[in-house]
Length: 359
Image (tube, rainbow, N blue to C red; front, side):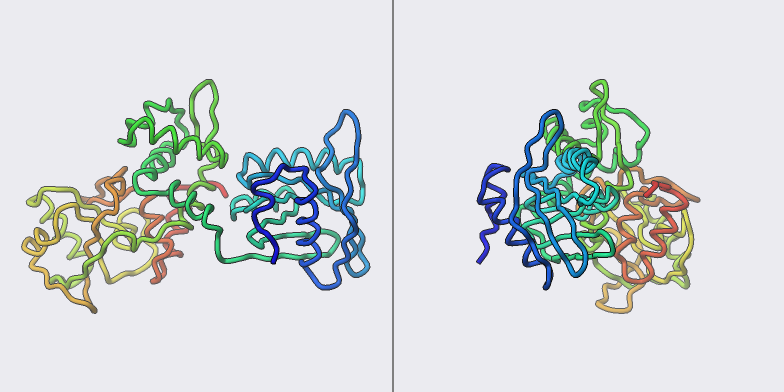
């Protein structure tokens, strides 16, 4: 069995790592011939960690391999620059990055840079001269899952909301922490991760969001609206719009915040899909709304779902439209994207009309 910890714990130029890379290359596809790796020495210019000649069917190529201890974007960008410089002197070469794990964001960075990759989780992409070899493992390594959970943890995600809603603003760390209502220490830890992932950059000691689209996409893929506990009810109302009006009127008598989301929320800011079910975040206990709206809890066939916010951050940037309160555009997009009833269509329409982050 191949030891999958070699590259994580060893120095980038060790012979054990080089042997590991060769073994994994030979396992990529039947008929792929891999020669013994070698080092190339040169002065005044970067040299790849490993050079490997391969043959696949009638194609020959020289792989220029850079081995990184991390697959974070900051490491990848450094490797890409070095490989492009090294490849400029080798006309029949193809650059490849090797790392413990490369996320979907990292893979897109490499793909756009026309650089292949191989990681220890089993993911890879080699694309040159009509040759296309790709593998994608569904399971992330435990370390990658822990990092993603910590980056998009409930309180940590308050930082992302602030940055995305103020995408053009430049922030001091203290101002960012205050706006997000988190501790300075937590803000520092989250920002360090965002810097490493190159979502954020620092200029003159001020922080600015560098890649809003990438941050939103990565958060979206890690988020499920069902993380918020949901209770479903039948409420007396002929139409969803009438029910929303009743909720808005009741909210004036009930202490605590509320905000419409999913298709009900989208109908207020960027209507695109017809809907029958109303989803609303409610800060007050459900019993308060049961009495105010004469609700009857049901397992199936309800027309109102009360969502208990998984974090108070869901109310950030909530705003009033025609007397009703709707969640901010970022939260609305996140909730809609994985919603099964045409949620993705509505999410993309909202993004085009309201968020307008360039992909």
